[in-house]
Length: 504
Image (cartoon, rainbow, N blue to C red; front, side, top):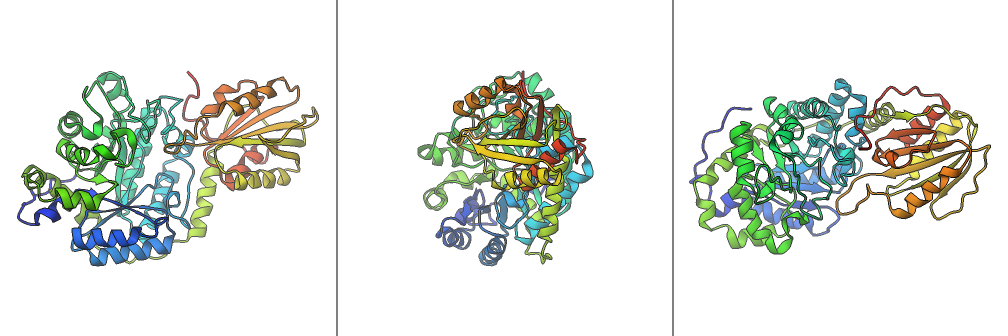
C-alpha cells in the first residue's frame, strides 16, 4: 500500500467542515436544479466531492471547474466508468462490459482502455473512478454483477482488475475497486434487496476476496464495500455497516490503508430513506471514510454536523486518509488536451470485435437469414451492424422481426435469434422474461439451421441447448453486430474464449 499519512488534527477544520468531508453527494444533469445544489454544498458546506451522473462532456467539464473554484478544499469528482466515461457521460467513449476483456485476456488491450478512460475523465475534471469491478461472478443467475465481472475465475479477475486499477492510478485517476468482499455470488440485486452470501471464510478467501488481496498488494488506493451480508465474516449486518469486515478484516488482516468509499446510499439494500441518517453514522463508525450519494446531504449536515460523533478523534484517521488521497489525485485543476473521441470510439469497437466468442457451431450454411430479435437492451445500432456485416458477406436478410411480430420460418433460410440483455440496477434486465423464453423455445422444432447471438450477458445461452451455432459478445453496439455477422459469414476468425461457465 502507500505510506500512511500523518494523523489528521481535529483543529484543522471547523466541526461542520469536518463532517462534510465524509459526504459525497451526486450531481445528476437530468435534474435542472442539481448544479445549483452542488454549488451550495461545495461553497457553504465544503463537502468531500461529488459523484457525476449524465450530462455531456463539455457540460461536465465546465461544472467541475466551477465547483473546484468555489470550494475551499480540493474536491473528488467520481463517476462509474467500468465501461469507460461513456457509461455516464454522453459524447465520451463507451466500451463493452468488463467480461469482454476477460474474453480477450490481453494486458495491453486492457491498459489501453484504462488509459483512454483516465484521459477522458481528466479532461472532464473527474479524478475518482468507481472501477474496476473485482467481483468474481460465480453465480450465473446473478442479476446485477453478471457481465460486469471480468470472469468467474479469481485468477483472471485478480490479474485484469489489478492491471486496470494500477493503470488508472498511474494516469492520475484514483481507482476504487468494488464490491468488497465480493458481490459475484448473489442471487439478488443490492439496489433493491439486501443479499446474503452464505460462503465459508475459506471459500471467500479462495475466490471472492482473492482479487482484492492482489490489488491491495499492488497499491490499490480505494475500496468500495458491498451492500451485502457475509455471515462468515459478520453475522449481524452488511459489509457497508460492519466493523468486523471493514476494520478487522480489510484493514487489519489484509493490510489495506487506503480509502473506503461506500456504495450509493440511495440503494434499497440498507433499508431506505427512513434509515439513512442512522446508516450514515453507522457506516462511518464501522470504517467507511466517505459516504456516497446520500438522499439529503444538506439536511443531514445541518442536523448532524455539530454532533460529538464528528469531533471524536477516531474520525481523524479517516480525515487523514481523505486528505492524503486528495493530495495524490485531487490537488488541482490540470490542463488536459482534448481527447480524440473518434479514435477512442474506434478502439472500443475493436475491443468489441475481438471479444466475440463462438460457444459452438461455425459459419452459416445458408446465404439467407431471418433475424428474430428480442431482449431488454436497445437494438437499433446492433441490428444495423448485423445488416452491415451480412451485406458485406453477401448474405441476404429476408426478414427482421421482434417478439410482437409473427415469424414464418422457411427451411431454406437460417434462423438467427438475437438476444441482448445486461444488468442494470432495479431492472432485472439480465433475466429473460417467460414470454421470451417460451417464444425462443418454440423454435426448437424448426428443422432448418438455428443460430443464437447474445449481446451483453452470455448466461442465457445455457437455457437454449438446441441452437446449432451460438456466438456471444459483450455489448449491443454496431461494432458488435458487425462482428457477429462477420463470424457467421466467415469474414472474421474468432480467437476469444468465454471467460465464464454459463451453467451449473
